[in-house]
Image (cartoon, rainbow, N blue to C red; front, side, top):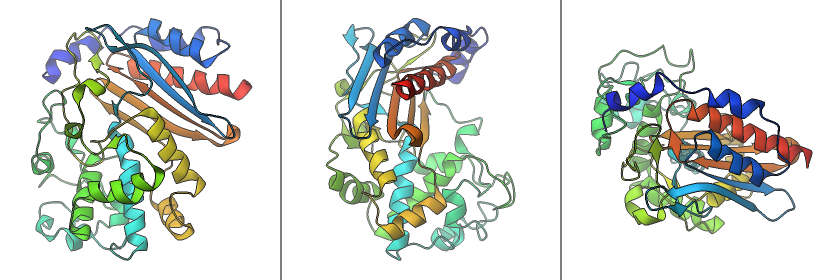
Length: 334
């Protein structure tokens, strides 16, 4: 689906985000989840892990709109950039194991990119992890099409090769998916095998996570929630995004379990935790066509809240954020 075909739907976007904000707050999370469907969401999944309480699952709307299959709170979902939490965690462990150094440069790790990425000899691994490298974001290139994703990592990287830097390394912040594309390549070289395997054996298996996958191609499509774009009827589930930092598929519960473990110290030892804290955040959102996700921990109520919405476009991302904030408010007053 070309970008031009969907861009027009954003011009006359309804103000559902404002409406979702001003309506009275319901008494329960399920009521809020049910109400969200009335504001343009095809489906929504929410996982809540409050300290000392059993996890709670909430869902409304469609898993598959055409087949009239209701949303399953345990279904798989494209978590997009939430994947970066897993790569940053893997990097922290490998730094602790002295297989990587935060202060080595991109040119040190991938010398073939010297001269093709500006300042490659000054951009450190630490800068890439923290989005302070100045490397352009490949998804912002005019040739990148969300509706027709490139299936080779090298093809995505080629979109920014020889482009000027956004800023001199370390002088500013700008989120760039290219950083984590390159980190995936660096991890593979350091390990001598795929970082996907390392994440599976070193991060997922110790937590008993069996429904988190590196790539869409690893799962049966019928187990994945369908994705939709406002005003576009077709299911976007088959679109496959393979670049590290945006490729993973998981259930809401497993994202929640991972985030809780990352925060409470049960995943990393003390030294690894210190390294991680210096390089990345403890929350994330994700977006690809048809899929918007939020993963956050709320310290004041000791609660992890994961929200998956299988609609994007128009002002749906705003609605999703508003619904998420309202759910947290409901939890806070309980």
